[in-house]
Length: 86
Image (cartoon, rainbow, N blue to C red):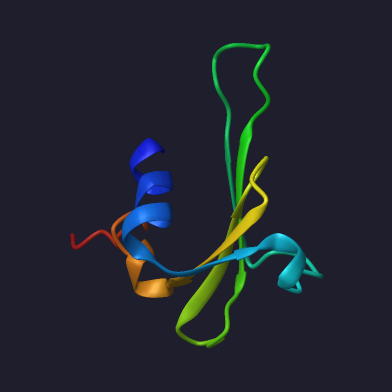
């Protein structure tokens, strides 16, 4: 999870926008919810909507963050489960 967040902010985001400047209405295309064993901590939610180039990019927002990252979909290939080759 930490690597994904660092990648978004420092390596793989094409642009970073204030959330108020991007229209994120409607249900997200993808949602990742991460629960921690500590009961006092809220789950971390990462939502993704179709981005500026709807076929090639995603707008990604992390819960508790006031920024939206514009990221190429291909950058998520390393965290997407691959089909079993067997």
